[in-house]
Image (cartoon, rainbow, N blue to C red; front, side, top):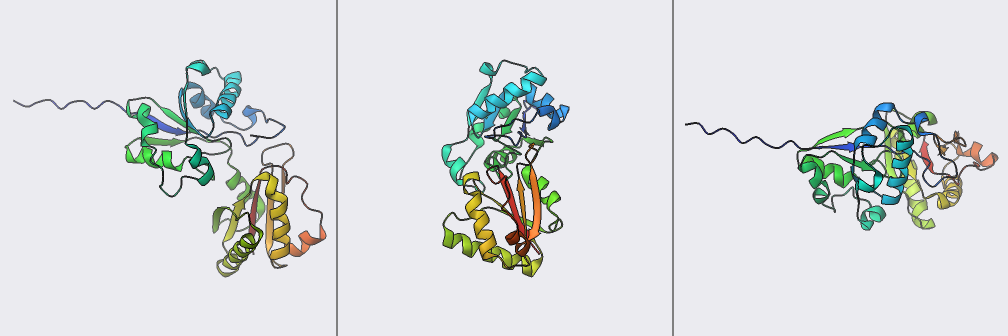
Amino acid sequence: MDVPATAQAPTGSLWLVPAPLDFGCDVEVPLHDLMPPGTLEVAARLNHWVCENAKSTRAYLKRVNALMPLSRPIQEHTITELPRAVHKKGDHQGEFDARGLLQAAVHGHDVGLISEAGMPALADPGVSVVRAAHQLGLTVRPLVGPSSLPLAMASSGLNGQQFSFVGYLPAQAQERTQRLRELEALAQRTGTAQWFIETPYRNAALWDSLLQVLAPATRVACCSGLTLPAQQVQCHDVQTWRRRAAPTALQLPTVFGLGV
């Protein structure tokens, strides 16, 4: 007699939920100006979260709730933070096993992944969670919302067919100089635009290094406060930048690019 196969319990999905780019800024941009209704609908119904920071996640959910009521009160949401070491060192090289954070999805609940700003796992923590979802056989579902990298790349005029994002540059001046020269040489040799970011309080020091180190003909893009009212996007060659005043929005989150 044939034995009927045991039905496998359905698993949940991992949803990549974008957050607005105004985290830590003085002005909040209305969510309805940034997020499609479909993204807000998913965020409103989820109540299991893996996040970079629980406090900022709750603040974001309150903003969502003002437009689209949450399925449960925030106090009833399960919000799990990634380890502190992941925030500081990143999780893109496979050091952290995040499968334990996705047990709710294994047992049938949809889980949201969220960072403090932009798209999680893209220039933000969360790669380990996405990797773990694939290892566990979960469906990964990215949602539409703001992400500073593609916004900067598209608006800069630098090469949009060949580009590379290299994350943060070294904080020490000598190491930063060496890295900038390497990136400039790579851009000159291959035509590939090179993109990087910095903590806002170090943006001014990085800007000074760009103008001191790079060749006059190298083009530099400075994309600050993307999606914010004070947004500034400018791209000129270094010799032109040296004749101009420094960008006035460097205190805001900024994406930098260089190319030919």
